[in-house]
Image (cartoon, rainbow, N blue to C red; front, side, top):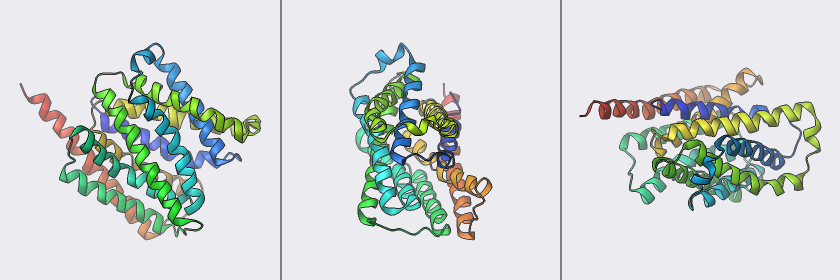
Length: 290
């Protein structure tokens, strides 16, 4: 798939719709996250089918645990700092950890352009939060630490998935193993928090969308994108998620964006273009070589 960056951005757009969809459900946030992973992970595993067995690698088993733990760290963070700050710290730190892990584990040193664009993108995310007037409350320090741990976990399972895909394992099989494993891990959390809310038509519709759309389809696209997109670049492109969430809040929920938030959106968009375009140029240069 030559349009790797487009596939990654497509996945990020789907991720960005999750918050709005989640507002339709009255369930506990941990139960919602667990149901999302159980449905999405099961769908990915079923789609991979017989390819699952060949994709079971040592690195993907801890990656599955990391994908499940990320959800728990994320919700532990937002419960202490608030949704806005917890989200921007977890998502914003992801590309930094991904670039560092890719460098340490695989020797792929991020380029100067990636560093500048990623820094600008994170600043754009921060501007979205500041413009929204987010207030941190509760146990802020521990909440930020949980968010940073979540960003590290996200980076770890992304780098592990990219490594196996780079070795020739089918992307859908890699995602099936990783999120199928996460589904098994999250089943007890779903059972512990109750499933009565799934009997509501709105709740069922929302969780099906969250599981099939924002998890199964999004990670299918993300896996395809990782075939031709460096993992550090993919992690930065995934910062499109908070931009989509902010736009949905503006259009669907009637929220207002302050001027600094608008500036953050513009900075974020320009940063994502700066990251994506060089990769496509490099692909054309490689194709032109004898």
